Amino acid sequence: MPFNSSLVKAVFREVTPLHVSRSAAWAAASVTGTVLREIIGGARKAAADQARTKLIPGDLLTAIDRNVELEVGTQWYGHSPTFRGLTGVPAGRRGRARRPSAVAGAHRFESGVKKLLRGQGVTAVPVLVRDLDGIASVFLTGLARDAAMVVREGGIQRFGTVTLEAPGEPAVLPPLEARLRALSTRTGDGRTVDTDDVLAAATMQLFGGGLRQRALAEAGGATADLVD
Image 1 (cartoon, rainbow, N blue to C red):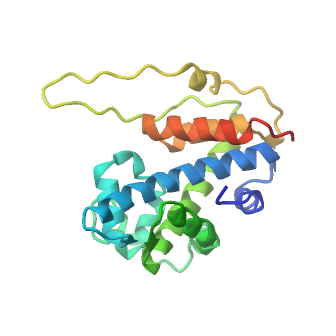
Image 2 (image 1 turned 45 degrees about the vertical axis):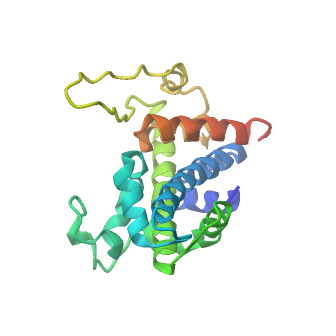
Image 3 (image 1 turned 135 degrees about the vertical axis):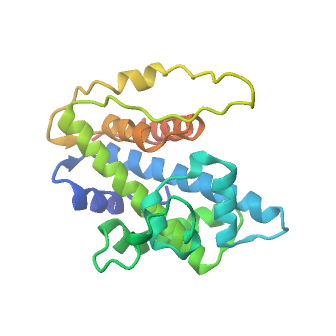
């Protein structure tokens, strides 16, 4: 697990006073790790096209351009020169004196990011490591906020999705999986963020079916034998 549970719980404490169960922290770490692994994998393929094993910011942009599911942690984009000038980046966000805690604390994820890079046999220039730090921090902070909201509201009512279609052919909406429907109604107490709350939050943060499915499956495996 690239991101340890103590780091995850520290992020949760910044956004909610709710207790976070051990398995919920592991689930959040797993989901974040899956997301970063997929982003790095996409950037690695972009670098491989140019016979490189050291990733540069352009590889990140190419990875996101090739796979819209990887466009996560977007609040970081306004703070990074990598995304400067791109459509949809709120220009007014750069230069603010007061930064969100997720951005100010992004450096905490450097060790986990480098571990994920080594796992795919690549390295990255410092600015790209910083970008991956920031994306991880913003994503995990959003995951924590949504998980806390699930606890407060007793479930979720919205699921994001991305549907790929061929030109000239009608879009076919994928069926909502039984697992996702089960997460729409919460059964736990109102004082603790549990594993299912994190998984429900992940369905809100990850709008692409493929990445979301992998993240939920890997989180389920990572927490299967844990006892809170």
